[in-house]
Length: 286
Image 1: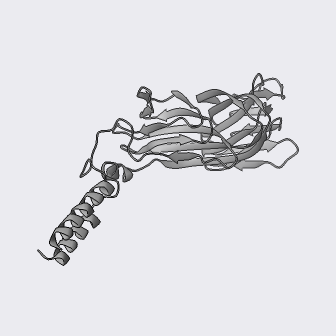
Image 2: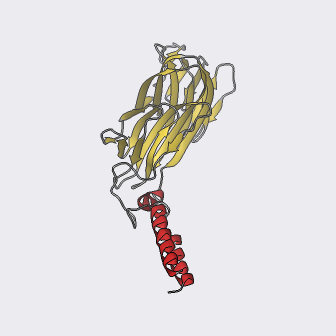
Image 3: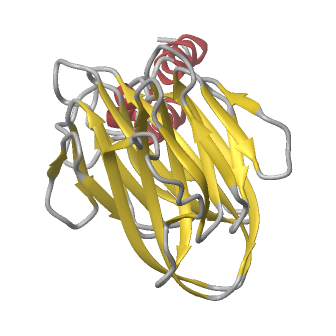
């Protein structure tokens, strides 16, 4: 065989190799979709806090009379329409996907004046010992309040600085996953529907089911994957330091998953082996 023919065959083999070998199939795995998201930039004093996540359901006519919160709150509309009446401000509506940032102590009314149920989700950075909600309108015969179907709390210690409160809803179709990854700030996660498999690096696999709560430290590496045949949805609140990445993926293959793909040897290593063979063949033919 001529040198030129040997070179052509080996170059063709090298160019056809996968770049990542075993992990290549997981590089194609679908990720979750983000159905709702909100962000609230704020400056935080050093201290102990609770990162609190809430979902509130307002039946028609349900309301929270004039009130305020003990910490900054990020509210996102999920379903239906709520009427918001800030003290001294203009009435406006909160519809699905709308975001409202509430300063600590800001007084306002939330009421469902429609004929359909409404749902909101909220992340609150609550200083240790502060009241989540204080109602200042103590009129007799108040309207019924909202119900709280989902809630999670994460006690954290925070250094002074600039942050963002982040509010997310992630939907995982069957097979969808976030490979080994970590977050730039502490996270409180609440299961909303379906089941997710969680695989912390160096820890024990467990499931997140509706109403379950998982607290993730900044930098903790883990996998999230929907191994079931049904959709799964989670709620997440994050306190993200300014400039930090929300999510950093560090591996394309979820921890503990069986090896798949065309080869158990990374393509780059096979390429080096084939090029070494090429060198030997050409050297012997010289």
